[in-house]
Image (cartoon, rainbow, N blue to C red; front, top):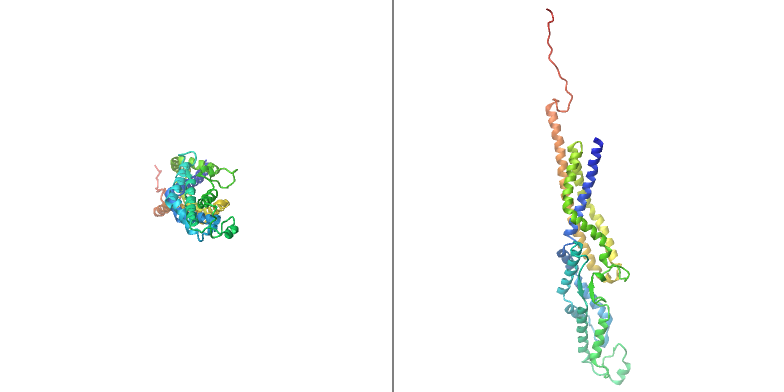
Length: 363
């Protein structure tokens, strides 16, 4: 019977470790990955907006080339992109996306609910570029007959054909931008068209990780009960073990081991973040954002490691306090035994010496 009680107490010790790790992970996710303000700070640090504007500028410059003999147009394109899609708008849209995903993860909505209208930004950008080209076209001289004969489809000759309206030329620039993949080749950005892979056959990102999110939601719902369960498991260990002091020792070992595991989890987390980064960059549409995405992942990893170190340290301190208490208790008991010098109850064998007397049986 004693062996069974010891075995049950040890098994409950393992359960206690699992519960402590589960709570540490759950609270870490909630305080870091589901914190919209922290994510906004990480995105600001990553210079994601600058990367987006540079991508739009490069793509537009490659698309338009040196049409109509406009030289060094990149600063013009960059300025137009910043006016069409201001950084304040970018931050608002990021916050919408983050808030929608946090609400979904917390079970407030059945799926991420956000819708970013990109077509308006794209149209505004295209019109600004077209207006600039129009201003450049209007100051070109009319082509001579010789120049008109040399005119090619890219209109690279430094003149303007008399039979072509400048507004038509500007409109063609606007149409080129509108039909391109600049600002993504979609009208609205929502949860349905964000995928880990660009293939139409792949499901949206939120469906891919839906099972993981459901498990997290279950843990969050059970979190208050898990705290109560930890207390009950600890009391059960003390009650079941034949020697209460060893029951306390099991609890101390459980907290200490949990703390060490949580602190050392940075090794596993580093490997997981590397795999996540590689998986994201398998999608060709985000390759141009490698630097900001990597910075965001690194910032999140650092914050999670920092929180894990805090939780692990707390667990370790609690465990060491319990173990030190047990050690002091043992030392105190030994000291009491030594001071008693083998008196009854001290745990040493005693010899009882009875007084003797002579009894006279004569008479």
